[in-house]
Image 1 (tube, one colour):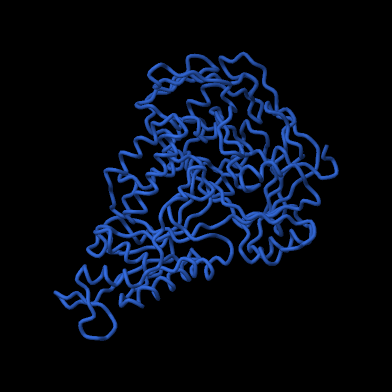
Image 2: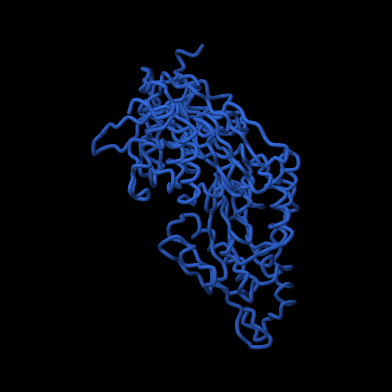
Amino acid sequence: MALLPGCGKESETAQVQAGEELSIAVTEMPDSLNPLYATSRLAEEFFLLVYDPLWRIDANGQPVGCLAEDYSLSSDQLTWTIRLRKDVTFSDGVPLTSADVKYTFETMMINSQVYDPCFDGVREIRCPDDYTVVITTEYIKGDMLMNPVPILPRHIWIEQPDLRSFTNDELIGSGPFLRQMVDTGPQETSWIFQARSNYFGGAAKLGSVRFIYYSTETMAGRTLSSGEVDAAFGLSDVQLTTLQGVPGVRLIQSYLPGSEVWGVAFNTRRPYFNTTPMRIMVEYCTDRAWMLSMSSGEAGMTGSVWASPGASYFNSMVNMRGMNPVDAQNICYTAGYYDGDGDGMLEDMVTGDPLVLNLYTSSLDSWSSTAATILMDGLAAIGVDVDLKVVDGPVTSACTPKGSWDMCMLSWRGNANPVLAAKRFCAAQNSLTGWSNDAYEAAYDQLRTATDDMAKQNAAYQLQQIVYDEAPYMVLIYHSDIQAIRDDYWTGFDEVLEASGGVFGIGSVDAYMNIEPAGTAG
């Protein structure tokens, strides 16, 4: 396809550049290469390389113009007029225009549970010409510049009869890298991305990136130690020991905005947990430090609020409730539970029924079995019995919104955008626990309409404080992201590391653009 109707611009097929290849060991497979439905971190990393959003997030977590050359905002702040760059082509040579943006946004709004929250409040999208997009919103949308949606090539996607079954193997985008369709054989699963020499934002300093899958963190660590690969991410706390002191290996333990948060959800519809004190009772029985040591080693820190500590809006000033079995038992007494028969277990003083809580965990979460055992021991110490139920699939498949579960162990990933992160706990989104709070909803409205950075931070702090005080969730552990790179082979990543706390998986393409062989630096 040489021309896109209405553009009048000759296509230019993507040119690749020669150069060194950066090989990265990874310990997960992408769940899909279709941005509408993919949720895995590795898939998101691929999308960063091959697609462009209107604004990229840099290593400092700030939005910078990408496809959007500039924009203007109406006086009532409800209409955004975005002017696109005119020098952008997809990797198949077709120019990118406003039609691609409109198609992508409207398709994401209908089909993608991953990205559709980005369009809350969007009422209409218009394209008055090939390089102008006009977006009208229902309310002042303070997070518009944080929209990470990758712009898809309309001419390819509109031809697909079923978007859900579209595998998108070629990954044609406008980004700084293109996928090389190389069969690497049965002994290795890898994905190669070649740098585009004619990328409008300037070419990367390396020639290509190869992600190589290893089934265990141990194998990934060994290949890095031996020099077979140049970097690795998705490592475990074991590699903090095995890779420590290996010549040429820079170990990185980071907390990123998208890092995992491990916690417990309470079913507030159940009689045991329909009041805040009984939920706090469980926290008073929880030894977070012991959980961290036994389930995650040194790969994390004890939790408090729902945001990741790598997020710029993380509230570190919450007055934590520590482990306090005496106060926990007093809460049970106040609620009418005593050890009436002297067997060491609490019973309802009216009915005589023992106080038994059920706790759901998933066999898919390696950390939750250890954490569940420690939680159960802490509750048993004050006379509360726990019935542990392990499910084979995701724990939320068993813990339905109106199910008979009491507690479940689950994890979630943070987000650089505080609006998207906070929405998880709104009543409309948070159907799992059944918790709702008018003050939270009001603070969320302040957050999503705030255009001032200080107002955003204050609202985000308040939202974290409300959830901590009400305790529909108990945050146990912030899991750190462990990665490493051969700094005897490669350089150019120090500024990214200093800004973001990590090199890979940071939600920014900056590292891939700036890393270069150590011998050619300068």
